[in-house]
Image: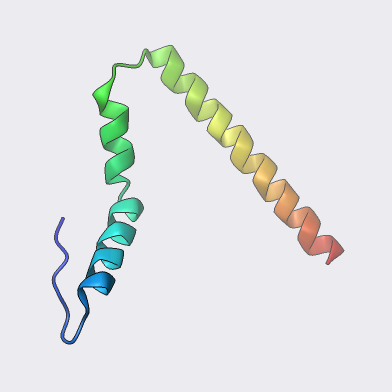
Length: 68
């Protein structure tokens, strides 16, 4: 991954852009996942719990939009 400096861009903005891009591509997350072995059943369990959390979050959001 590369982030090139734009014209008249400060180094702080360059670093912020790099951090945003790395988060978007989930580079750090993938590194942390690969550092330790996880059993396939553990991976399935984590995916399932993430899906449940996302569904709950979207339900809460819809509820707030209806009320407000």
